[in-house]
Amino acid sequence: MKYVFGPVPSRRLGQSLGIDTIPLKTCNWNCVYCQLGRTRPLINQRKDYYPVQDILVEVQQALDSHQPGEIDWVTFVGSGEPLLHASMGVLIRGVKRLTPLPVAVITNGSLLYLPEVREDLILADAVLPSLDAGKATLYRKINRPHREVTYQRLVDGMVAFRKVYQGRLWVEVMLVRGLNDTPQALHEIAKVLERIQPDAVHINLPTRPPVESWVESSTPEGLMQALAVLGNIAEVVHPAEGSFDLSGYEDPVDAVLAIITRHPMRQEELEHTISHWTPGKVRQVLADLNASGRAQIVERLGMRFWSASPSHYPDKTQSMRTKPEAKDH
Ligand code: SF4
Image (cartoon, rainbow, N blue to C red; front, side, top):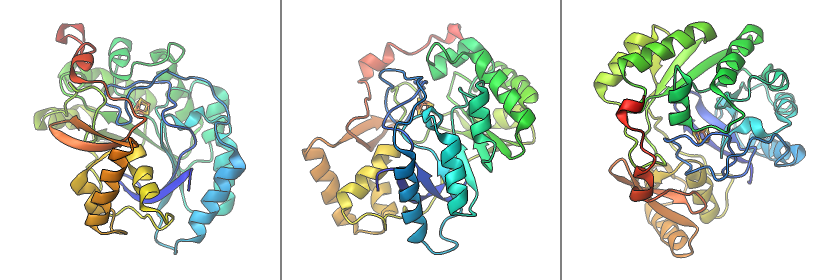
């Protein structure tokens, strides 16, 4: 399987069958907390990165190989910003023809200012865009966007989408210590959320390796503060527990690569979540991938994670050069 993975346990979507519409890492943001490494270069061109028909054939195969109840959601998510695929509307309609399961799209939301993108998403059952900042300067520090996707466009796009969208709009806020978990930053975000009127606000913490080594999760106090300020539709989304379904893979090497390309993980976590093979087999696969240069170990948050090799994580010295000064935000 090249485009479809899982189902994987999702924090918000139960057992989620993932559809990856773009190559690693195609994105118009370069978030300081991104778990997929740096975006090099920033890409803001919408096009058919993969053929629609090939993606839908894989979705059909994945659906055929699962029993009712094994998949809760079909989710467009993956190796960057999924809405950069120009045929997202065709893909969503295609999936809806194949299954009655609800369809979600996890996006950074930066392209919602385009009428054609809002139109593409209209049939999705849930759309989960990001809002990590309540003003443009902090947006540029956290999300480091392509120059065409401005803060004004991000907010205007979400407001315009909410006006026409009947499905569930769940806005995700990734809380980064010292950047957007201060009372002032949270009040600014809350003000913008009032304009957007989402159905829920999901507060997230970086639990996978953030690309920049200085990024830290918010503190328990920061979290409490966020819950208090962002209102009663806000909830903290804890990491999901559960196994990754790898029945679509015959080769354990492909299976492990499919996971760590999209979800870098600690070794114990991989051994625990890949129940399809023994921990010994998983360890051996990781050692082989490391030796052949297809996987790398990344140290972040005081832990060691496995990631696919094309993902670019700067070393500590390079990374520290990108750390904003506290007085700047
Ligand atoms: S976190 Fe998402 S939006 Fe941000 S750089 Fe990574 S893939 Fe792009």
